[in-house]
Image (tube, rainbow, N blue to C red; front, side, top):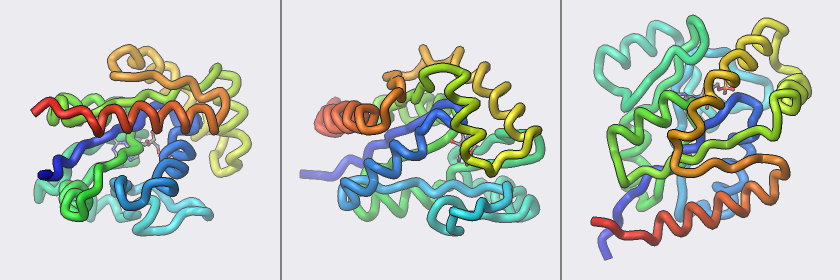
Length: 194
Ligand code: 5GP
């Protein structure tokens, strides 16, 4: 049977736990699913690896890639900090017969849906509360007070767009959230509407 590569987008506020959910799912199904490694101009965190979590590049290189039309979508997610999905990532993963998982912001997620329609499943990961979100971001210890405020401010705006996603998963318990996401992804992959 011909392989039809699908796109599965995880979005939600920073600190909602979407990255943890994505990582767990990828660990379980490494032959079926692949991670779209975004490019970003933000500094690398201590626990991150270049070329695995992100391609950490300079602003100049990012701007050059915009000019060369190398992105499917890109956003200035925070003031002066760019994030973008590279066309080459989707091509790389589809060549390997893998469906693509994205961990991107709400605007980026909705843009991908607009572009690729029913090839895309959009999942919004909702924190149980804003208080919970603040606690999780504080625990990360990588955020300055300013970055923390910025992320919580953005979370308020993002939560209002949850209704535009195909599915909303409340991440109260990581294992439960992963299980729910898996079920939804499998149903979507098996569905054939071409
Ligand atoms: P962080 O700095 O915490 O890794 O990511 C900040 C936000 O940027 C998160 O919501 C993350 O999902 C989002 N993000 C990561 N990569 C991309 C991307 O390629 N495009 C867009 N639009 N957002 C991204």
